[in-house]
Image (cartoon, rainbow, N blue to C red; front, side):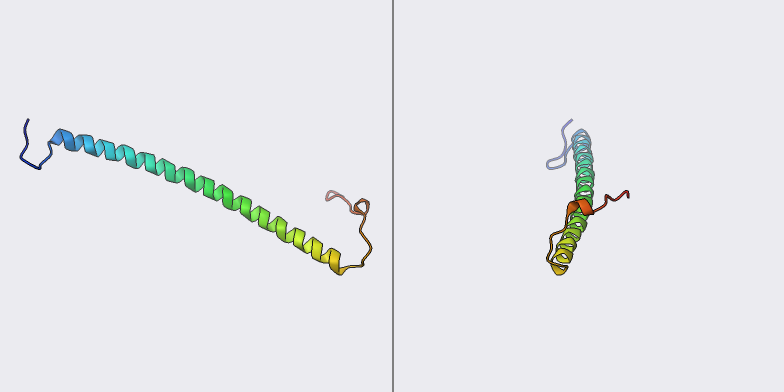
Amino acid sequence: MASQAGTPSPERLERRVQELEFVITHLQKTVEDLNSALVLQQKTIDVLCRQLEQAKSDIRSGLSGDSSPRSLADDKPPHY
């Protein structure tokens, strides 16, 4: 069926709508995947920042204390 000049046929419009729905669904999935990756990365960054701050604190306390080296044998494991 011929359509007026510049006006797409209903079939063509339906096909375009379906293509756009497919693209939108794909983009939504991509955004969700990227968000999940970002959340995981932020959690990892938070853990690493806490570990870095603890290491810096440990170094500062080691430097400000007496000058004799600490023995690791003197440190008790966390479960003691």
